[in-house]
Length: 268
Image 1 (cartoon, rainbow, N blue to C red):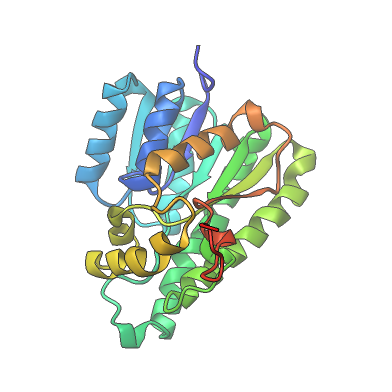
Image 2 (cartoon, rainbow, N blue to C red):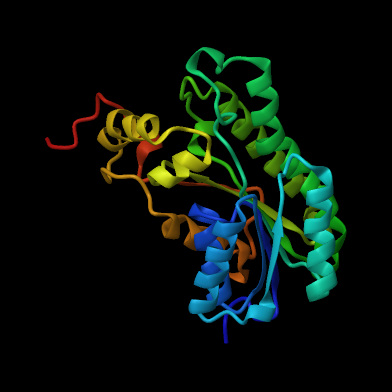
């Protein structure tokens, strides 16, 4: 028996990274999972990995398209309920650090602002609205994937950090508004993940590796970035009945990065 037997889960941005790892982990625990992304080849790879982990093909649904498109978001929910009959968990994981192709001189442009806010915030709000009627029926829950960038500035990703700070407050507000309906809403705020995470967020591999080497790893007590599986396991916990008394929680999993500063000497 798995923790998510007969549960139905939607995971946005599940073609790689945290979302892919989460899809595999939920499948191992018996969930029926809708995976989503824009790269169909990577989605097929996620499906393959889920099946290798023990998922039945009939318990997987693939929906592709941009979260900027409200029709894609609507179809995510409608197709999931049509295939599986209900919805228990929504994982709002899709996100982006900057609009792909944005030059350093364009990071503060309104074009970049609109894109980053649409993907990281507006899409979450819109998809949540579509999902709420079904989550109310199942007394389900939502986990929003935010970032430690919600708590710390990371120039030049100013709009990304702004969007994630707003997302955390959206999580808290939803927890208050929907708690009486039996819906829990929590947030996972990861630290830095691997280089593929950077690529998926519109950041070049070279730029992201420099970010890890100069800012993250030397200033993280564990001395490394996270593996996507480590974040997937936190998502699994927050969405499970093991976290039944948690709502409105902002759960930081960053290897200690957010509590560390250069003045701290760990080798007294």
